[in-house]
Image (cartoon, rainbow, N blue to C red; front, side, top):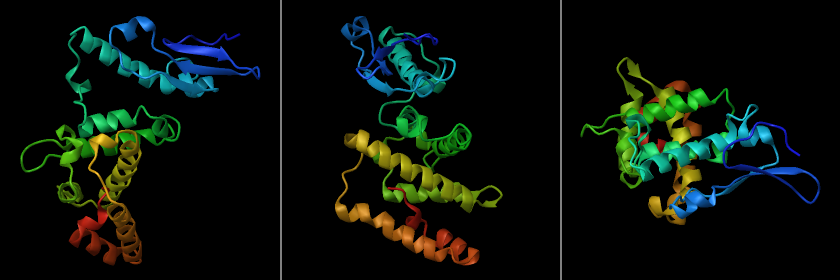
Length: 228
């Protein structure tokens, strides 16, 4: 029925209409050992599920999560660079990159830019000496977001307004997607607070009518650039 490269934990199933669909299913053996990685339908496209050669797609991200979880279970040392505590900004971005919003909707051409922006955000260091990536999601309050934005746009060689816009745009997208998937990790918001960013966006768009006015607004009022 299916002649493409086999991928660990990926099952190809023939549906009633004769088409083939793919599913990521952790073996029962690992379930009994406590593995909590969720099973997931991967769709009808082998390329989207596993990549063209069986070394890509959504399955690679899920298998990487399994390997990390399994190494922790066996008390194996994990590379420091791969460790991201649950609920931190590092974890948030890493988890976002395993979701379909990234694996299916972000083109391969755009991914290096996404990676660069996420890395820049996580590696930004505050006055306390802590990386943003090491902070818990709930620690990034609107006030903290303003300070992070100020840090990013005030680069060593002058203002980096474009960098700031890129960071705000991506963070707003990640926060929106991941809040829906992990609501307990985020601050509870009211309908009024959810509407606030749209008001600020409108003001920012109006302010961009001239580059000079737009730059002055961003420098004077970074709160209008919040992603929260």
